[in-house]
Image 1: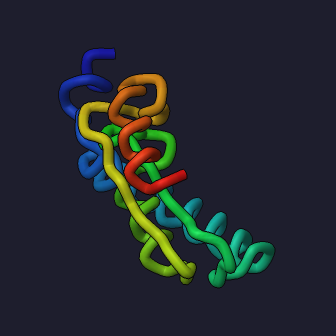
Image 2: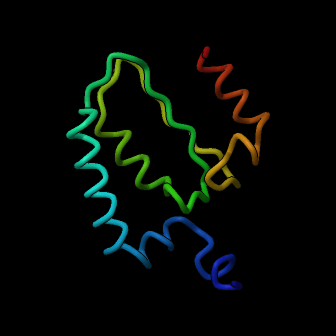
Length: 102
């Protein structure tokens, strides 16, 4: 388990080490998702991502974010968190939501 926390501790390293698999899965998921949901939204879209999210790495979430169109959109990266920033840093996430005005 040590490798999981030290050698691959950044999402960038995880992405690099698993690039072929991640690119294939993400490309399939993104393509199929685009077919269902499209890239144009009529409502605001906001992403709050944990810096160390291994389930949906920031690099992939940001790629998707940059491709979509919405009347308002925002991307917020919460440092020092994984897949659940609302659980890891609830006050920081609450401030982001408050600042957005939701």
